[in-house]
Every structure is written in C-alpha cells, then in structure tokens.
Amino acid sequence: MELYEYSVSALKKMLQNKKVSSREVTEAFLDRIEIIDGKVQAYITKTAEEALKKADEIDSKRQKGEELPSLAGIPMALKDNLCTKDIKTTCASKNLYNFKPPYSATVVEKLDKNGAVMLGKLNMDEFAMGSSCENSRFFSTRNPWDLERVPGGSSGGSAAAVAAREASYTLGSDTGGSIRQPASFCGVVGLKPTYGRVSRYGLVAFASSLDQIGPFANTVEDVALVLQAIAGHDPMDSTSVDIPVPDYSEALQGDIKGMKIGIPREYFPDELSSDVKDVVQKGIKKLEDLGAIVEECSMPHTEYALPTYYIVAPAEASSNLARYDGVRYGYRDKDAKNVLEMFMKTRNEGFGEEVKRRIMIGTYALSSGYYDAYYLKALKVRTLIRRDFESAFEKYDCLVSPTSPSVAFKLGDRVDDPLAMYLSDLFTVPANMAGIPAISLPCGFSEGLPVGMQIMGKAFAEETILKVAHAFEKNSDFQGQKPRGVE
Amino acid sequence: MRITKKDVEHVALLSRLDLTEEEKEAYTKQLNSIIDYMNKINELDTEGVEPTAHVLPIYNVMREDEVGESLDREKVLENAPEKENGQFKVPRIV
Image 1 (cartoon, each protein chain N blue to C red):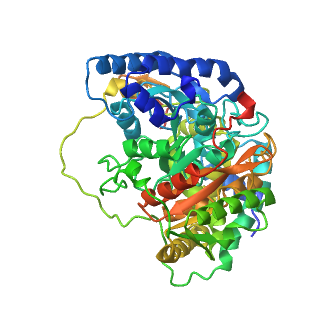
Image 2 (image 1 turned 30 degrees about the vertical axis):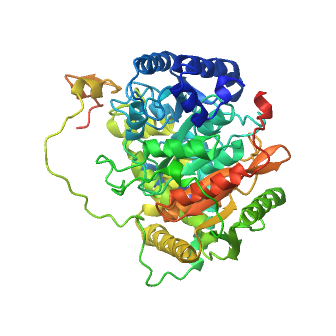
Image 3 (image 1 turned 135 degrees about the vertical axis):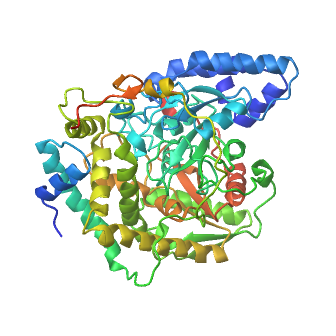
C-alpha cells in the first residue's frame, strides 16, 4: 500500500508512532500529484516548496518530542476560494487571476496551527457558481472514475483530489450542494456543516446566508477529524455561533439501533434516475438492517426549494460580487477612458458566462418593481421550507435521500442548458435554505460510477449524521475500490 | 411577464456589465426560461408568512470598541492594478 492511500486517521497514527515522517508522506503525495494531476487537473496552484518546509518543521518538532496537534504533518489541499496569505487565491476567475490575499481565512489559520501541510489550491467553478467544474476560467477538472465525466461542482477539484488520492483531505465550500454533489460524483465523503458551525472569515463570499465551509475525505472518521479542527466560534465572523464544539470522533461510537430516520418521498421524484434510486433504496435498507427505524415522510415544499434558491443565491451574489470593479485587486481593463467604462469592461471581461448570468438574475430579482414579486416572495417560501424541516425533525433524528438525481454526467453535456445544470442541485439546496448540516457518502455504484447518499440532520447535530454515516460505512461492502480513470 | 432585450440592457447597466450583442441575445432567451421556472413559487400562498433572510437567531453582535491591528497599507496595495502615492489609482472621475 502506498503512503498516499492511507486514511487521515491511519497517517495520524503512523506519524505519531514515528513509523513514517511527514516529509515522506508529503513527498508521496507530491509525486502522486506529478504523475496523476495531468489527467485529473484538480490543482490550480501547487505549493510543493512550502509543503516540504512545513513537513520538515513538523518532523523536527516531533523528533524533539514536542506534543503535536491532531493533523500535524498530514498533507491536504484547499478550494481556491479560501484565502491563503501570499498564495494565489483565484476563485478560478479571470477577475482574481493574480490575487494574493494579505491574510488567511480562519479555517486556513486553524489548519495551519493544527500542523496541516498544504499541497496547493484546487479548481472549482468560477466563484463557486456551477455544478460541474466546467465554469472554471482555467480548465475543467476530470472525474477520477471516468476522465470523460465531470467531477461535479462547484468544489470539483476538492472532491477529485481526494478521490484520486492527490491529498489526504481537502476543504470545499457549499452554498447549494457544492460539497455534497461533487462528493457524490467522485465517491468520497463530503460534509456541509450547520450554517454558523465553521467561520466563513476569508472565504470569498458567494451567497452569505447560505455559504458554509466543510471537509472532504475518504472516510467518515476522517471527515470528523477535520471538522473538529475547523469548527467553532470566530470573532471575525459574527454569524459563527458561540456554542461548544463536541468531540466528533467520540460521536462515531456505538450503533444506530432505534434511531428514527425519515425518508422524504419528495426526494424520490420522477426526475430521479432509476439506477440512483435503486442504489439509495438498498442503502436505506441497510440502515434498517442496522437497527434504525425507517419511515417514509413528506416535506411538501421540497419542489419549491430550487426555484427559491435560484432567486436568493443570485440576489446575494449580485451584491457580493459588486466589489470586483478593477480598483483594489484583480483584473482591470486598462484601455477604459472613464471610470464607468472601466467598471463595465473590467467586469464583463473578468467574469465568465455563468457568473454574469447569476449577477443578472440577482440584479433583476432585486430591482425596482420586481423585489416583492421575486426576492421577498422567495424569502417567504424559504420560511416554508424551513418549517418542513422543523416538523420533520420533531419526529426524526435525521433524513436520508439521494445526494444528486444522477451519477456524474459527461463533460459538455449540460453546459448549454443552465436549467439542466441547476437540476443536479435538486436535493442538496434545501439543507442550505434551512441552514442544517448534511453529509454525502458513497452508497454504492451504478455502471461503475459512484452514487452518493445524503443524510441531513438538525442544526448543530453533526454528531448524529456522522454517527449514521459511520455505521453505514463500516457495514458496506464496496469500500476499497479504486477510481478506474487513474489506476 | 416576458423579459425583452431592453430589460436585459437595463439590468446589465445596473450590474455594470458591458455585454456584447451576442451576450444580450443569449441572456434574453436564458433569463426568460429561468424566470419562468422561478415563477413556480407563485403557486404558493405566502400570506402572513414571515420572510427568512437568515437562519440564525442572531441579532446585532456587539464587541468592545478597541483598536486592533490593521493590514499594512503597502501590503494591501500590492494587489492594486494601478497605484500612486500610497493610493489606488483610477481613471479621471470629474
């Protein structure tokens, strides 16, 4: 077994017992990236030199017998919308092609203090807007299971890197499914924490009432370890909540006997491909075999979540993205003769097609005469969607559904049809609307491609969904399969 | 409610986007189909429903008004497309 194939928790033990050094592990991942990334194209920026320097620091501390934190010496990588001090943070946009943040995001600081070794920055849909990674202004990342298919999005690079073992774990961000959907497509575990569980300070904003940062890894246990390191209150983000962070690894213990799981029937509509449906239903059966009490339930406003999302998210984005005006950082059209022309040309050239489309939708929904009909109406529907969850969680500990209506689709298949692209977020968007935590984990395969199962929980009940996910994972029989595209 | 090319031009100006002719045509078509889809929410009666702008019960987060560390001016200006005398430079405004 190669060093890059071990889980985070296995590497942690091997490093602690000095079976291996951080330099050896880091070099194994860097070599892996050299060999594989030409095919997968997960990385925008590689930081090999900094990584080795950090690895050596950790190794020398360990040699001296210093007490080291949980993730010390383990190589990881970050979605390129997380600010890294003095290291390019592009959001896969021409607008930020040369941006070097003067500060790091809180999650980046936290991982750094935890001894993490950063290998580089990962590809994504421009400004996290997209479901396939094809909206990156640089290149499209490929799905390690089939290089002709998309890895999902927007955190496509983060999911593909973990699947292809180009990083032991990664961070992504999730506004409407951008962690869970690519995790599903790439056959890895991805967690969107509760809104407010993880500080968003230093995450380049897309839709501020929906955005949340979360981890990707190959196992539920690893995701719990990483969540532990990044969760908690941050004075720099007033929407991060000041409540204690539980021990997530501890929470994985024990069985799920008697746990009540709701299966919302609206998450199994006609649009759901039958192969995905079969695999997820088998997964649900497995949870029942493990002792959970499984019941069908109804969440009547589910079908309104996607149209609501595509008003609320673009509205917030149109406001957040007003800052890209060519004045303080990033791209500027140098030929403009006056300042209005500079704004208009800079923005039109700096943003790609999908980002402009969403700025236009959002501006329209907020504009005079349409505000009440679209934006305010959408916020009211958002309340109805929240209430669906509140009443479901009165009866159930968690809710289980497919993560996305299909397996990974082929590159180019949906680029000309924005609505078809938006539909892959059908089952992930509601959790963002309600601010609740949700995890996607591999549930099986359909024609050789991974299918993800989504587990949604009550606000700040990450422990519950991690526990159910862990119980499922331990008892599944398809672990250890390697992505065909890169083996 | 149909969105015309004129509407698209108006929204593009509000958005500060200098769209090309082809883009205006494409967005007119796409915005119509997307807005049609959004209109689905009008099936719902939301009379008396409070809007949710934000999911957390957090209001007015206060802290002590203390002087903290600021980012270094030169450091911040490193990212500027154009700068002069420690300031951001833009085309003439008036």
